[in-house]
Image 1 (cartoon, each protein chain N blue to C red):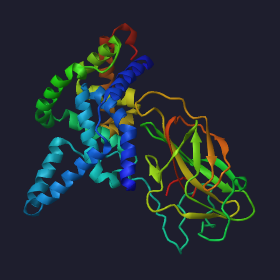
Image 2 (tube, each protein chain N blue to C red; image 1 turned 45 degrees about the horizontal axis):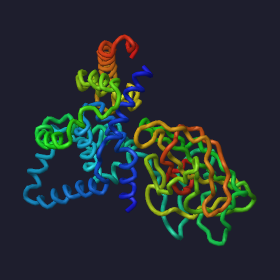
Image 3 (cartoon, one colour; image 1 turned 90 degrees about the vertical axis):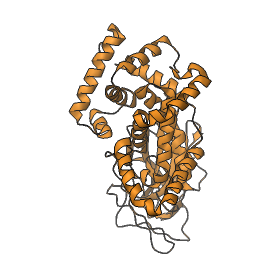
Image 4 (cartoon, chains in turn cyan, purple; image 1 turned 60 degrees about the vertical axis):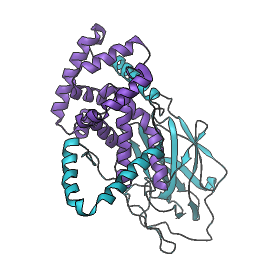
Length: 246
Length: 165
């Protein structure tokens, strides 16, 4: 079986490598122009189109939403400069529900030696399609509050993870990264994700460790990472809660 | 702009792998290329909604497969593909290197499409029976029987060494 899997994987990998693909921009333009065209035709033909659309859906099998996909839970985090942001409704042990992160000015940002950085089990997810993620948990182990905002810097096997608001596995789905104030003992999290194979389908060695620099800091620490991710690392912003998702 | 970056990153990260998977399912590289790109075209206008789902890659794969096997589209594109094949020589046959790959490719192509699809989803994509059932919209029992028949046919085709496939 593994021999068959191996050969099948090589065959597919060869096709993947030989594929000639247009740039993403061209596909976006083509997809968009169809929508525009469809809207332009609109008006009196709308009803006709609706019927035709249903027929097309049935006959061509274009199903916009295959049934297996379920909406990701996206806890809403209010983005406001005055009100305190709502913590993501996670039940993990990391976040103290009573101590909601508040936005303050005048509090010092969290230095590395005031933080305990670990992997949160709550953010762990291994997709069937070669995407894995874990949340990095940043806990204030000091005795006074500190703040952080934006992206940790994460280096995996010499490669700096791309800093993106959200990726395949989640992250900050909307709005800007907030300023998060951590009371002593409180934690926030940032989602780290990677692929479990090279983009061309070939295999790669999982990252054993991640080197993490807290947002806005210079010093870094290295933590062990147990998942199969080995390519295209991405890090998303620090968000309230322990799942790295908001 | 976040959507654009997000989409482009997703495309860059998944499109080749998806072409490989769809190629294994339909047996033709140019059809797989076309179908996957078509699926990405269709994904873009609904991207904000799609990216909120757990697995846009499965969505693309499903749409691309349907596009590739749609007879309506095949008829429309046959001419185009033909012209291109002529222009590019026999590139499309099998992009793989060894004779081993040729044999496997030929054996896969002899399987009925639906058997090939579940074999690829299981052995290449790595989905469980339950996941395959959800992705293609049939009962798990159907997936199992297609897989069993497909494996049996492949084992016979690929010779003794692969009886345990």
